[in-house]
Length: 432
Image (cartoon, rainbow, N blue to C red; front, side, top):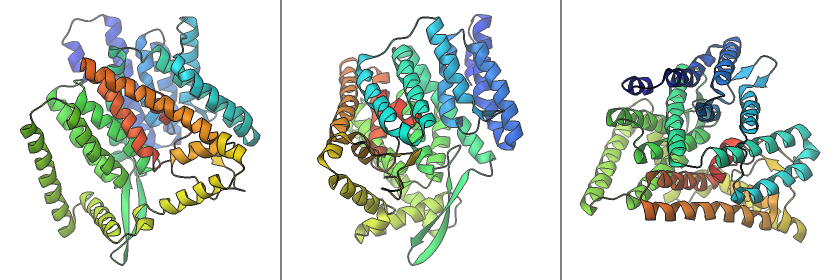
């Protein structure tokens, strides 16, 4: 789709080659599901293609693909392709003297780096170094590349292409589903949840939602292609059977409609149509066995039943108990730890002497790791940038500002049910 649009215009040969390489980088990983050896060969080819792009700005557009295929692409010796990309990224930035740092990001970078040096290094020095390196790359990437409309729009364009590639990978791969059991109407039901290239359907839903909102807001693709992509993305979102993802999307659509121009009648018509279609699909799925839809309908029915009966343990998938336990531990700490944190509880590991699981809540993670002061600093940074983007959108009506606002919304929504620190893939949208 990208090549067809490109070839209709007169463009330099070098640009055609760069686009071709980039398309290859995004779709070759599809075949990594064939096996470990095949994935290594693909990773070698991709590394060469990335090297070919290093002298052009298209090199920066490789990052969205890395978000989705981080775990699948590994070179011989167990070296992640992403690690090669980060090294090449730093070489490119240094050689071209493009190292710039957004002053807004210096405080969170310093805070997170100190945490890694003081706390994480005691448990795993290698992980501490990796977190700091990834964090540094994310901050330089934001400060050096995501600084203007064209680059931001292109980033989300290729982010959508990466999402599409991942959905196809998930359909092809036999390991794309996660079997979960839910106690519904007195019976344990097995539900298969679509995960794409991720091990967790909720994580996949996070990125699908960002892709959907960027498609709805930006004019990156022709209408026909946009409609097809939206249908595919909504299929994938429904197939995750993630109530977090579905509620995030539904609430996000209402927020989006409140920002976009249009008559009240048109907005009401869209909302009414969405509700009618949703009710029809829900009723059909509950009465007939429809692949994907029936699993999601059962999960929705279970959620409604738990909400009406006040069964918040089942409603939150036991998360409210986990949150309560971690918050209780937080408030029972010495005042120093309440203010400054110092606990070790991350996606990469946690202190088994203190905790039995992750918190499933990024905000509670912040309190435990960085303390109340660190929490306030990080959230203030997040809210400050969100408010700036919102003001800029209201003043200029530039859609790329609205995409940034919606990306922030998705991160905030998911922060109540997912542990996301210190993954660079989530920090990118937190610090954006």
